Image 1 (cartoon, rainbow, N blue to C red):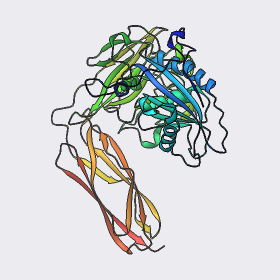
Image 2 (cartoon, one colour; image 1 turned 90 degrees about the horizontal axis):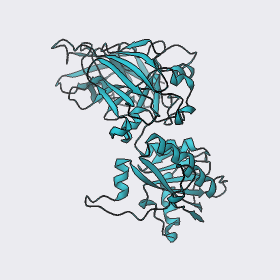
Image 3 (tube, rainbow, N blue to C red; image 1 turned 180 degrees about the vertical axis):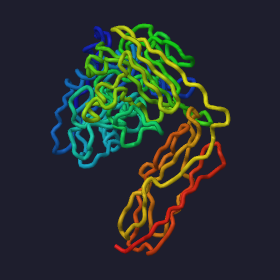
Image 4 (cartoon, one colour; image 1 turned 45 degrees about the horizontal axis):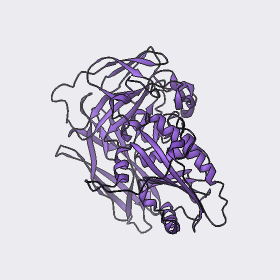
Amino acid sequence: MQTTSWSSSTILCGTLALFACAPAATIDATGKTESERRISSHHGELRVLAAIVSFPGKQQLWTVPAVELMMSGPVNAYYREVTRQKLWLNTTVVGPLQIAGGDLCEPQSWYDRVSAALADDSLVPDSYDRVLLFVPSTGACPVAGGAFAQRAAYINGIREPKTVIHELGHTFGLAHSRSVDCGDVTLPADGEPPFAAIAEYGDPADVMAVGRGHFNVVQMEKAGWFETADHGPITTVSDSGTYILGVLSKDDQRKRGLRVLKAISPDGSRREYYYLEYRQAHGVDRQTPPGQWQGIRVLLGSQPYGLGSQLLDMTPGSGPDANSDIRDAPLPFGQSYLDPVSGLRISAKSGDSNQAIVEIELPQGPTPGACQQHATIELGQPLASIARGETATLLVRVTNNDATGCPLSLFSLTKLLSPTGVLAQPLSGGPLYLSGGQRSTLVYLLKASPAAPLGIAKLRMDIMRAGNPTSYGLSVPLTIVPE
């Protein structure tokens, strides 16, 4: 086994040196170790253990020099740049370590076996801030890599820095950077984007998706890298007016993002925002598609963070398919976007290589008494019968009948009673956050057992609105027929 660490004094311009191993973690007055403090703050030196793992009968292409070069070079340089030198990697590379496994995708077991293999070398993976397992390519894991146990990740045979940067991002609590394609509109007039319209890895610029560029402003805010004034923090827009946006990847005093309230839950626990950012061919964003530089990028995000970010297509229908359509997603200069529910207007006025000018017109509030009105629950499509041993899809449409501009309301399933012998499994069972006038659909998979009683039965469900004692019920007649 080979173990390598270099002194940080050899670093020149933060490029091709490997940082030295720091002393063992110590406990401070709060009872937290240095590692625990860094996991929560995401600032300062990040001690990383990179373990090259070998499985019996599988070829390991990674070598210690190759991992050293990648971690100390492009991976470290990326995190230094996007955090404005507030986070840097101190990596120790070990391996190759021969362990059992590879036939099953079991990263936690791999971690435990690596820990046991390193015991004789006085290296304790648990004492590091992050642990990366570089495993040979195994079909047991259908993805290029994955994060687990909050502070660890594995790389499944992929030999490129982008994958490592992406998986490390997950250890900072970042979800994937999604995109939304609603056909010829940016968002539907009656609600949030349907599930089928969301692409899991859809953001073509963001490294937490298919891109190779800068973390978007939603991800940066989640990781805590917009916390200080010298980092160009996000501005929450509270008044209509004209705002200046700096280039996301440039290190100056301009604001890196704007956050405009879209909706709020009745109890104030969840807020949905439009996030605005401006990218140019600078720094890591030189690797992004040129279409992402042509205007203001608009994303959906929420507080609490929830499921990450969703890039909106502000030029819908410009491409033959979703993948090409999203490549020119920004709102072009000289054009405006009108929120279909609240009436909020966002206008991209102008931009150059250093900044962009954006105008925000906030909507008027709803008429008093127009919120917390009745909701409607109905079948999304007819469902007459189901055969023994077969499955059927149940679609339930929920509509918030509040006036346009009312805040988000939370709708949750409180009761689901299916007929004897019929199992109802939620495929997208909520909870649902709907603004006034919005509509969404719950999807359930019904499966009738071979012994389900024949004849007419009823499926019953109740949905409750947070902050309102009213329960909305739906009774669905269902005929169970022979196979």
